[in-house]
Image 1: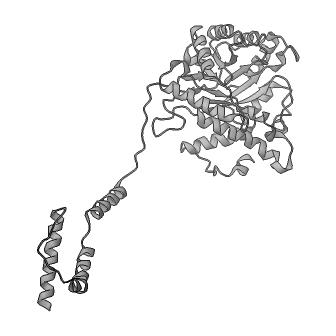
Image 2: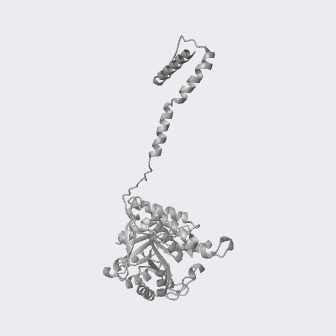
Image 3: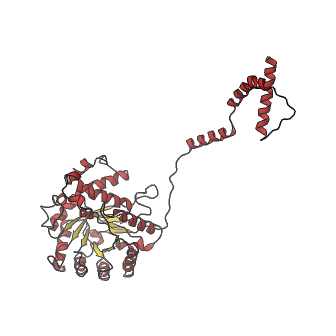
Length: 400
């Protein structure tokens, strides 16, 4: 019995070896006792086959081993274009009187893709001030009400709050308000320049006819300071604004209402007037959180990608007035169900700023000091340059 079992086992081993070498085999003139095969041979075959791995198992084991040993490699994108670098302000050695200059743009990759290219310039933050007191959201006004009668003191206040640039808005020049003359408005510009040593953004009232005259007067008294003139549009006298910017050495904001083709057109017109890319910032319109910000995201990403891909008419840094967030009623309206305005309003502006920051914004015009503080800390954390050590998710403490 033992000898018969041994011979059967040898036969099965020979058949198995043969089966490994050929795909199909046919056995003829063989007589098999089914009962003996079922009772004696089947357990032996089962034991042998369980101990021998199949070809598919061997391949699968090799794949698993290969996945374990593999390392993820970040895909690196190389762009043929580069966003121009705009220098804002001028020091004494450069013909101005600013304590330091601020640079925006200059990147050759998408926002915060530091694994592709080094981020040369961090985003720039301006805080809005006005030449006359005006109605502001309560959560903004409480920070400035003691200085709103004096633009120079207001400028000092926002610099203490962390503004890299002061955004001065000469709204009193509006013919429907005080209709202040361009020369009188220019005196306010002089006062603010003397009060602080950071660069300025100078804006008018939004009146299409008067703004170019106001900006011309402001540009003249700020000659050599390399301020930003806000702004040139297709429906105002953009040629005059470009002319005075060239004459007195300033920067121009090109503003268009959410249309990439119009933005490209206006940029090209300003370049045709003799302004280099390094003297142009583009404002394609910033919508507030919940009020069309998805359009802003799409537009800014398209502009940034087009510039990086080589479209020279869209290779300028993007300016974003995220203070527009205070136009959303959720930011300022008193409603207990929505939570306290003290946090809700600043968060509304902060989330708007963060969204635009990741979409391609380079320089931001803001209102609430907590917005600037939180976003600057967050940028440092993203770039691994944080020294404060405060958790980014701790919004309440950050806003306190």
